[in-house]
Image 1 (cartoon, protein in one colour):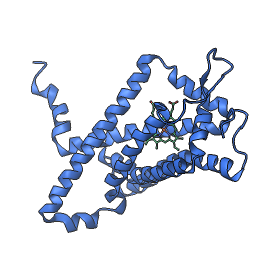
Image 2: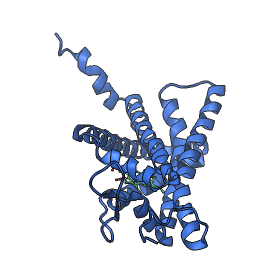
Image 3: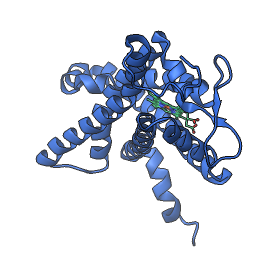
Image 4: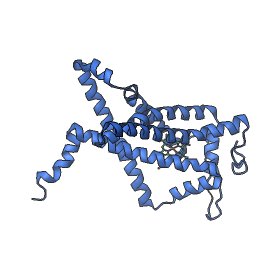
Length: 250
Ligand code: HEM
């Protein structure tokens, strides 16, 4: 029959076997990394000027309702699954360590792998604050508005909103600290996830570690460039932003 064990077994074993859970942890992590790479490219538009960033943000917000919510649901599900499976793996590993394998486990684990949980916790905390800050815009005054030639109604001036946020040194430093946690998590996480999906062999593993580091550098340098550039403009006076487009935000 169609509902026989063979049709449900793959789903059940994905959650009930440790290999299945590692694959789910890897796939959910790689979905989040893909988002982060796209998010970095989107944020780099700030260096092309106010209209480029504001148009990008406006286009995202104007996506058909179904598309935007599909993307958000996919991301949120990936995040919840990733956190739940990572916590479970951590608890199981601790139990094994408590049974006397501690020395062997810690000798074979790299510093980066031991830092995965603390770095993940910092990223999770950052994410909650970040979404309240830039997406829900719950802190401070309402976001500045601006015009785009092709849009009839005023749009949110994300260019000025980001500049305003990072011109507070505390905010810029807090974001850079969160990006340090992102770096640690990505350097180990990307390589580890791709290995969990069966990518092996000594030479290929070396390539994989290079790839993992390249993704981490792209994301962290790309995103970190934004608060650093605002800091240089606002506190040192290096003219990196279009002050006319900031609409008096400084
Ligand atoms: C300096 C670093 C960053 C900057 C300048 C930045 C900028 C932004 C901005 C402007 C938005 C709001 C977009 C809008 O609603 O128009 C946003 C949303 C978001 N950011 Fe970031 N971001 C940074 C780092 C990060 C990091 C490290 C992560 C993940 C770990 C992240 C994840 C998100 C998510 C999940 C959203 C919500 C997307 C949505 O509204 O559907 N961001 N970010």
